[in-house]
Length: 215
Image (cartoon, rainbow, N blue to C red; front, side, top):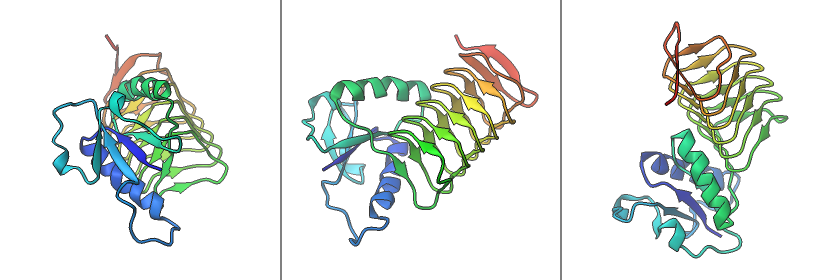
């Protein structure tokens, strides 16, 4: 069984170590088999020598086994959504990563392929969709919903009863106040404060926030 990391950039390097920690947590082994984790990437000129694990090749050229799975190491929410469709076409299941240092409420729902990185907080009754990335110190309040393929950057905060649509991106330290709804594919800039609902495909930045459509 091999878990493939789709994306060999800096985020891919980070996720390799989070995945390794997750796999070793509660295990009676100190090291993983070298074939347990591998990278795939669309870049044919990739220098694979700097990767922490083997490079298996381009996604369309790798022969996957029945028990293999995959995570997406891409920080752009829209790209995550696009690659998720390709993963489905390849017939690969997603692997969910929950780093041992994260705190996730027992009654939270975590979708397939979600990546919950170190020191993340996920509160009671919240729903984390498929292929979501919650980066370090991100905070999801009670009864909140994070739509599929969304990304919360480090220290991003969504408070109780917030609802994010699909493929929403929140920059570092962005905050959404309680009970706000954010439409699909919105982009919220770093350190922005969102107090009101956002229509789909809206770019919101600043405090006070400035809003414009995504072109």
